[in-house]
Image (cartoon, rainbow, N blue to C red; front, side):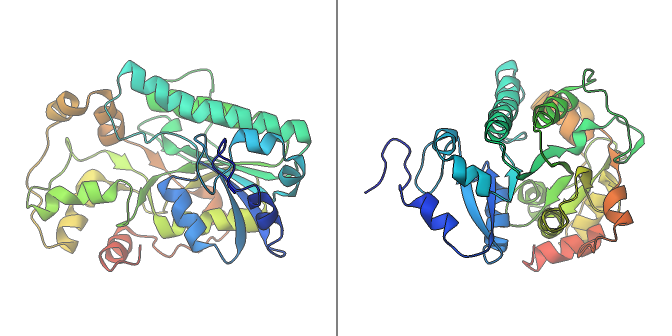
Length: 314
């Protein structure tokens, strides 16, 4: 019989903890695209506990965790991916509040709960490269002032990371670049106009952006779990490209033209501040730590990544 209050089976906790010696990973934001792919890819290596703010079958809520102190103490690591999709709707004042609250509040609540029970879990909290200053080269050593932000992307990521820093145990902050995959996320939307022969650069096309294949993101998270390394990690590919280069590679790989340039004024008209920050701002971020630690990228170049997407591997 199911517990209707939380939408989970009372046997779920026992089932997870009794599945052998595999390490237990608590995934906050378990319904996200990245979480779903990570759990599918590493289901034989880890036991997963799915944490969601909305009660549903097979998932736990913070209320469930609060009454299962022993379960929390048995968790090897937490991957914190909670947060509403940043690119799914125009950034009205209401939407900005939703994006902030969906990241900051669950992170604060979870770190507070883990601290109260004295959990020893390795806390890996997602963030994004939008935290960095524009128009300069950034790496993990770039100083960040968490009290100042020049745009909403910086406000969002800096407040999210500030919430994660309340955790008193081992903490890693993973700053994601644009995650590229044919299975979901942003890329299918990016590709669509090309398939209809309407693709082209955004604005002047000179804006740099930092990206990573879904495969390499998954492997990088697993690498951090294996090593228990802490601190800041930029989860981006070693190759930095601009929008013109990205556009040309897509057009070449899918044998389509790339002549329909979308002017900056039109992007701002259609998408407002979200368009400016997600499509036009220039962000140059390098994975200094992963390179220094000889992390093995499967798709280090945009050409190899797009080839992997087209073949269905990513």
